[in-house]
Length: 322
Image 1 (cartoon, rainbow, N blue to C red):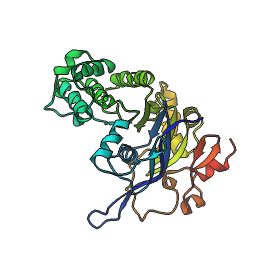
Image 2 (cartoon, rainbow, N blue to C red):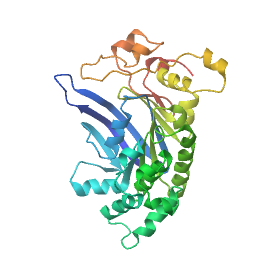
Image 3 (cartoon, rainbow, N blue to C red):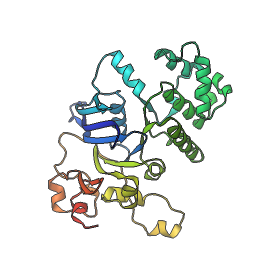
Image 4 (cartoon, helix red, strand yellow):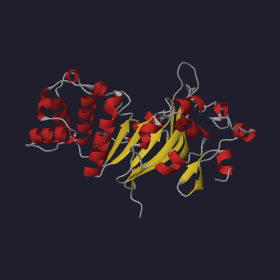
């Protein structure tokens, strides 16, 4: 039996008009689910709605419409107590660790504050701080350091330790390695995998980089302009991508072969326009798609199952026999 720990159904987020413009639809009918102990990768280029989805999942923002459940219990906007209870279940790790850490506080104070707010480990908080640092691969001497005394990788380890301090079941990781040096990214990914195995955590891992998502994810959802355009297991989405946009993302992954780099088609990953209430009625990817047909411009394809567990929102992909 599938044990779903986080279930988001038909999430939509519309931001109000600015300076007389149209309201912006950042998310449009997004449904994703996360199984306990697994990692759901959310991938898509900048502006596709990934970070908006992350903020909705952890309760930092309220959806315009849609339903969010943890362990089959609906999560609704409430007072401070409700927000604190949700924080105990699900935590967010931001892209830039330095912007999320108070520069006036030592690492020890950062972690101690979280334990105090949630009334955890009273009388043994010093020992818990040391335990958390060890968990993320930092020695106890880092407790007295300020954020500016840390490297990017060390600061992100502290941010991960802070998220783990409340003993959550789910951790949402919003581009957790994109601000780090390439040499450090693998270390953080390996750290996250180890912690997940030890604590049986469930992850939502968000990235614009499909190559990064594939190293940690069990399941993948590909987003484009506020919608999920493909979903499936890692091996389905990465090995046999269906949507032209997913194919473009996979084609953009660097390979150690200059001849292949020169010969493959350009992915066409360009900046995206704001989504307004006055958007065209067709597929949002149609202007960039090499396989576009007339029907693609006149209707939005529904996310439909192509094979067991593998869904795609593309008329052409659904028609093709694979």
